Picture 1 (tube, rainbow, N blue to C red):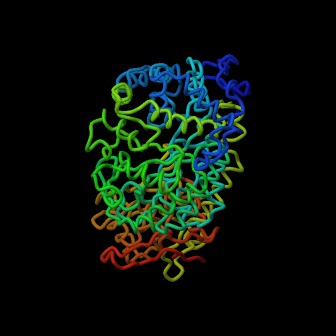
Picture 2: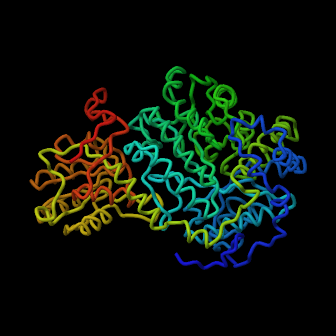
Length: 619
């Protein structure tokens, strides 16, 4: 990208206005807080009497009750600009939030955090993101007693990614789990963190610390590093250190552990049936590691966990789980943030006015993305005015939030700049590093009679068929096209034919006809189940007699659905970086080096393990 800014440290907003020094009054008054408050979230007590801590308490003492309530909320807002969004985004903001812009949101509710989404049109391109971030910081610092804002997003990489190309996109967690390298996990966090911070994003809701032991898990799956708690813990801790070394608050999620559920908490209310002893051995291990690594924030899960709290409440609203276990037993005193309060899992039992109050009573600090900010904000205000919550209780959470902001340098330097974006985001070295990390993740599960690698002199004409799910970031893919282009670059004559996640009989017939004119076939599969037509597609292609290589582009469990397949790879995600790595393996330009981070069970007998953790072939 070309530098289109003044290069000033304060950056420019979408109108080109440079931040004025007068807007730094709060920053100047709290200068040096970063150095004064570098203690990790578990070691704040010693800092109680430090100058930095006294300054934060002084800030809190000057805040109005309404400002304190606002500081607890992290809210979505539509638009690419803090002050001049597109009219459609103004209309949506008015409908959902009752304000026109991010600046108005901050002025009315004094929110302490903003969350970016691609679907909210917050993340068009890196320069725009930097300008939006600066506009948000400016709007907040312009207020009386204004404070810097925690600007957050879900940049997990892999299946969940809000900022797309030209930012560097890395393999997702389960792919990193297949690579088994703590150094790679830390590098991923360091580079991704540096790029986010250059765009003004200072809190990332990553890494996922769930141990995925349920192949049917519809919401975690490949977002987890794997099924071995110790391996997951090592990679979680490494990624946390990487992100936080780059000045971005990492977030371990979803406490107390969302890895064994067959229900998606966005749409239902999952129940985890683990015993307390199993929780200690399985789910707790990565969270303990994250805390030991100095994690800045922990996100709650909207799950019922009867062995930890038999009240029937979700963990997000559970005092025994959040205060008793997370704060008491695990010794964590950093920021606790809810998962989105718009999700069904937290709304099943209580109304939207009760949820934020109960979350604070349970031990939460940040309230994320309530369906109605007005309802939630006034509910918390009323709870304090009527004595259900004390102002001291709010002060505890605000102090944790301000400590986090200080630790990440927001009181000293909250701004982004176009020059910083150009120096940092999507650089050639970052992209090359992502490719190298991906090369260590591709996992070869089946290779009968040396079916792979394919060679251009022998299998020149390749047909690439299969599923083309939408890109996690909206900026990559489609997978069949990416694989075909990468294989063509490697010397093949590759043709792409999208057949979808549920191919019709006509689509299957078309693929089979095309396969007869090819020397070999590559099939991308996506979350195949027993009754899925992707099975029929693969069986029909195998019946042509052409060499067929299956590439499971999301769940590695797909291989269990294809007992007759002679070659099968797992990539764990379908963003370009993983697919290009798979193409190099298919072409023999790279050896497969990944090892399964989860076991794959037989499709017809789930009690029997087909491929254990650590399995992976090479050539």
